[in-house]
Length: 446
Ligand SMILES: [Zn+2]
Image 1 (tube, rainbow, N blue to C red):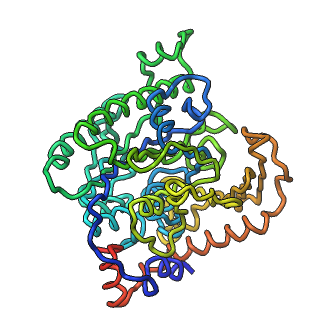
Image 2: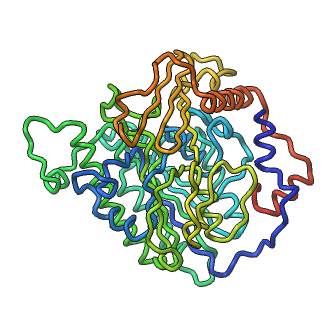
């Protein structure tokens, strides 16, 4: 089944072959991502504290996706899905430490084939190419792992300042020359990933009064305020080099964070809103008016939407939705859309049978449609249905815990299982020479 899925995702026999020349006005694209940032802790998403004055302005002046979700609340899988617009069971990188399949089409590969310079600057160990397979999709991939933010003991992360410094050094050279190629620049920040650090300056600004030690929730707020402030400064420096009006700037997080809801701290295992709902938006001042999108959106939508916005064709088989007609032409938002979600055990452990790492790792599948979310936990035969309009905290399931999955979510579970089995067993898809030539010509493979 997966072979069919993947093959249809990359075979292009029926697609007209467009010219390879890049449009002269192709914009620079800057993708800014923040790890572990839950939407409802940003003031523009309704938080009562003013944690995010910069992002409030950025999203308020651009496109704000009010109801966006990640596909899997885990770093490696979420980014592989962002760049390929494939679900985790399709790209195969379902858990941290499992690389996605080789040779997949992706946004950075398509852009590179179309004449972009592609560069990624990451600061999270799980995004190293060796673990995720993501670096292979970029021409320049800088793994900035200078220090653990807390103690300086292990080099598994970097501070926002370190990431920005290295990125800006590169941009100062790459962004200057006249007649240069357009840039696709991705920069990823690991704050506010746990362990949460208290930023005193922002504790003061948010009016937190210290009585004993600060709670993790308060510390998290100061992390959010700190990264918001940093993004403002960082983009200020970026737009000393690039023309802000003509740059397509995108912002989102890979997943949120559960801060004790449902007795759970962290992310990765569950499909509740604190980890699923993400902030997402973009700006392209020269081309797109400020607007708010309220229909359900997905992290999978970024690749097709960016391709649509810059006028490139959509490869068949992308799992996301192209919002560009809505954003630029006033097309109506889609109604009745279902978004699909899954969780897996997070990291691969040495004791696990190596040929069953994916199928044995599945924890939950879920669907979201018209304000209603269904979660199924197949191993334990459990099921929850929440009306998010009436019950945002997902406290009162509308169904019995042990009742069977609905037809729609049950079918989704079978698709995910089939994909996981195929990902564990099958080699990458085999394409004929002609397929490969077509794909190369279109920029969908190297
Ligand atoms: Zn993450």
